[in-house]
Image (cartoon, rainbow, N blue to C red; front, side, top):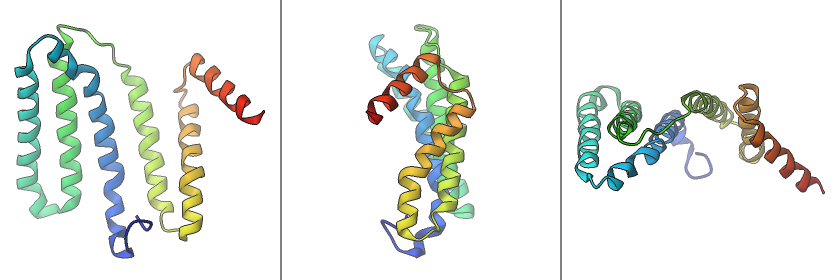
Length: 168
C-alpha cells in the first residue's frame, strides 16, 4: 500500500487478504460456469448472477453503514462463495466436475497466511518491504504449500527440474 499511496491508507491493508481470498474462491466458478453455456442454458448463469448481485446488494445495504469498508470486503467474500457454490451446484448434475476441495482449502489457507504475513510486514521501511514482498512472501507461500503436502509428485518433479535449469 505504501508503494501506491500515503500512510493514511495503511488501515485499509486489512481488506486485501479478504478480497484476494474472495476472488480466489470466485476463480473456481470458471470451471463450472461455462458448462451452462455449453448446455445452451444461459438462463442458469443469469440466475446465478442475479443471486450473487442480490446477496452483495442486501449485505452491503445492511452491513456497510454499521461496519464500513470491512463489511464490504466480507460481503464480497460471501457473494463469491454464493457464485461458486451455485455455479457448481447448477452444473454438477449435467457435467460432474471433480474439484479438489482439499487442495483448494490448503492453497487458500497458505494464501491467507501469506497475506497476513505480508500485512504485518508492510510496516517495514519501503526498500526492505519491497525485498520482503518480492522474495520472502513467495518463498513463504511455497514453503507453506510444501509443509501442507499440497504438491503432487509430478508438480514436485517439475519444480525440481525448473530449479536445476536455473542453477545451470
